[in-house]
Length: 358
Image 1 (cartoon, rainbow, N blue to C red):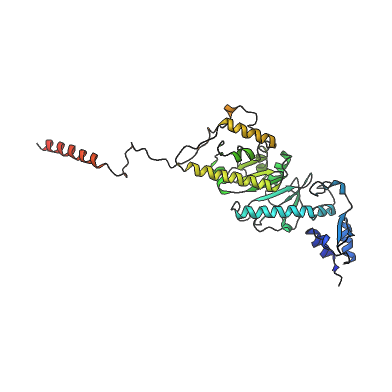
Image 2: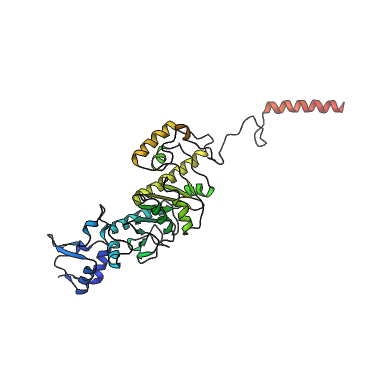
């Protein structure tokens, strides 16, 4: 029996990128055909009993990921919906949901905290919604906004902190994806106002480098976004004072990787300070070798080009309380006394008392 496709069926398939699952002998209602025309989608019969969904409009504007770069924030609602529901964007929605689950599973976010975004075109950005746990997001929960934060598409409201993401994207053209979360160890450094030291682990030096702290501003305000944006020219990962961490990259996966790296590093540094010894650092020469690798990878770092004597400067690093071994030469009321010393003290005391009595 031939399946009948209504306009509702077309909407659901288009939203999920599944128009190609329509059989070639399917019956498509007039209203469904009108919707396909609005979306500028044509169904072309092919072998195997199915059809190919093609868009005749702007095929030359597709980038390597299949995103139609001709769509702008002021494009027609039809074009914006077509972009939002395209198979290529649906794949990015899935990526955001996957990263959201990983953030939640690793306890980098709680409640509905954290937010993620991907820049699709010149002024259209895909982002997470507000008041939704990152561990349980679905592709249909995501939103489209312009570079001013105005919502263009999506059934849920966009995240309240999107202005920070947009400030980063405006200030740093390489920032195609932004990840913000509250990983506890790195956030602890941010709350304490302590910048993590350098020259301890190669991975963070190559992929991140020195991690600055942006001064506190109220979350969701333009001021917060501007404070962070001032640092993204030279840094891809930033601690936000009394708030959390934000990282940017060309993909949402890599932005998340940077979140993992800085959190693991801050945890390792904290453990190191509890061992009661001075942390070991590799030499400025070794750091310079790492910066040379970093420069080849095109990762920004303000230390590139500095002399070796200017590297590995941790003068402002405050390791906090350490479990140092007590100095044995200093007396301690809680320590056991030396028996021989106690005997000598007792003999001298007795002798003094006897002389006083005489």
